[in-house]
Image (cartoon, rainbow, N blue to C red; front, top):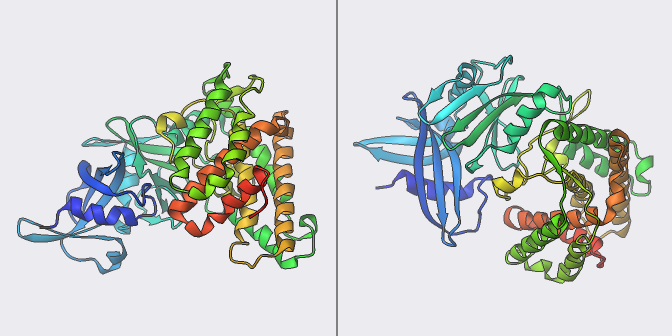
Amino acid sequence: MITLDRLLVDWLPQQRWFASKGRRIRTVVAARAATLRAANPRLDVLLVTVGFADGLRETYVVPLSVHPTPQDHLQHALLGDLEVDDHVWWVYDGLADREATTVWTELIAESRKIDTLSFHHEPGVRVPRGLPGDVLVVEQSNSSLVFGEHAILKVFRKVEIGPNPDVEIHRALRPAGNPHIAPLLGHVEATGPITVAMLQTFLPVASDGWSLATASVRDLYTERDLRADEVGGDFAGEAHRLGAATASVHADLARLLPNDKAEAGWLAEVADGMAERLQRTLQVVPELAEHVTGLTAAYDAIRELPTSLALQRIHGDLHLGQVLRTAQQWVLLDFEGEPARPLALRRQLDTPLRDVAAMLRSFDYAAQHLLLDEPADPQLAYRGTEWADRNRDAFCDGYAEASGADPREHAVLLRAFETDKAVYEALYEARHRPHWLPIPLASLDRLTGGEAG
């Protein structure tokens, strides 16, 4: 007889948000966190612990919708069918069952507690009720539902015990009224505590930074012989405003959450962490071997820098896909940090320069990814590098004007952070988008002084 655990073993590795693709699953244990609805359909929220052959264990949030008859409109979200007490039940991804998703905002609005799940709404906010949620179809490590034009629910898929930084930071920033974040409306927590989901104000008339930036690059490549500042889709003005918005959020994070000064030895610990990440990544991405000498030199260069850095909470995974442009301003999203990093590390104090370096990497990514399917063209490659450099400088100019401190004064540290981010990107692409792997590898050629590949 097929069991729910067996269905999950087959279904989980196929999901975009499953973090450990390629690892051999040894065990799957599903624990019911709550039953949100008893029937028509039955709605369960599971915490699924996956054990791998190499000893790693991960826990995932898996909402399920269980129907007594097959649902043709949910065929794309089917896990499979189960026989229980001589009756066959059809099991679907609960977030894809549109009409059943109204329960999430209803429970948040009422601040209900069901089984091990607690639903909370923020004081003084209006939580929309009665609207079904539409799955947001984007590449991400979590799953999101959009409720009309009012709210977006992010269900965290891979979870750990402890406060999720995304909820923690948005709750702290809410009193500041910073226009560069989307206000928090509520969140869902399981006993642990484990953050299961968060509800935010939705920004319906907004474009993500990646789409806007790559449109600018596409315009540049179409013109070919024009410089970035001569093309109608020049992005530098937006990059400048984005830099100022990032500095504004960093300032409020420093004011409203704990901060400190880096102690002696902090940069050496950072360099050690970068070296450890490189060694782990080499096991998956052997192509990095030719960059080891240059990467090690970049990491070692920060060990003896003066330790006068201010440490605070940061975004932790800032890039063009994590920002939205509304009619008024840029808005920063997803403050949970790099999903691959342990939760405790994502909540540690860090330097804002890590966020700056990550965004600088993102400009390079936007310039290079459109060349993946193009024959080698030195002219386009030159224009792409020119576009990235122009927007990197514009971002730093905006950041410096808003903060009073130019991040480029820390060039050695920025370079180390950029190379570390490129190593992270290489691991991510190898596991999720192998055809994109040449982008971070080519970036490392430039960052470590090699020849562009």
